[in-house]
Length: 467
Image (cartoon, rainbow, N blue to C red; front, side, top):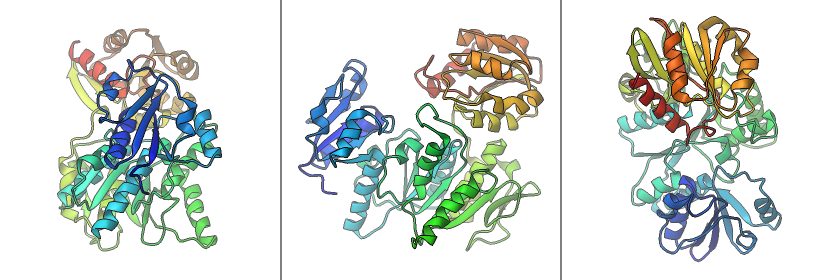
């Protein structure tokens, strides 16, 4: 993909769009960035643009989608918006920031006769923790690795910063939104951690959401690896999709699994110990979750997925074990905040969908005071009923979705409706008893009341510390 002298339109000016625009300009392209938000709303990002990049803000001028050689779309912009659909009909190439990064680094690998492999993680829940674990394992194993993608660091920015580095691996967290716009992206190893309903406010159906996730292995073939969750109900469908390619005379990746319930080729839990069945790894190697700093059944699965990917990538067993012993966990993922009066406060603001809250509640014996609510992503809150019945003492509901959640769960336990976030936290404290857990795990997006889930989590921690 030759970019020098080409006209490129970047659609969406946020972290990904800004980084993609700067990388494109550095490669000699003539870059214009367009976003429907105003210059005032986007000032922080406009200030980060390199000289020569032309912003067109406040609307999407049609000529930018007509007179261009390439369009690079940010993950938050659906491919279904009218200007992009019209550009596609005219045959203009449309790619995402992930695809741009992949093509640029692949070309550099060819120029330097040294291959940099991508290791990709997707799934509805657990992506960031698994991605970070894998990155730390590789670094502890002596590999030169970079970290980026949906985890918060735009991949194009990481490439731009490390343009002179010879990388062994790029570890990338990829969302369904990013996967919509790939063409050639081919990770050496990939994992789909789980698939549960999410983002159904963007996708027309669950089938469309699954299709987007499956694009992570669409270009994989012989010599590549795919790691799947043997316990996830969707895995049978994923395996069928992979093997159907073989029956169509295509090459397919080798599949490994992780499981908390049965022995598999990959990683599995047996008698409370994580065991491995991975080529080249001694059968005596295992991991003891009791030694981990991170807790919860979901982190057991994240650990197994990251470990299998690391071992398949040549990482030594000592590096895997050392990482798991020292890794403290990520902010806003079942993060312990404080214990006061015998009540523990846990920040799980990243629990932005129903499936995430299921995993979180499974990690507690109870009783739990659950703070939930926010902007609904068309989630089915009735899926929480068994766990709410067994483990939740009371519900404190906030945000736009509070009435929908109350209708789904309100007959099971006492419900308190609050309009103010601090009032919700205080209410949870007031109704809790020594030994209880106050858990913020909203099952919703944050954008009705907060800038993002990080803002929600940090406001929760601040309010808890002020109690």
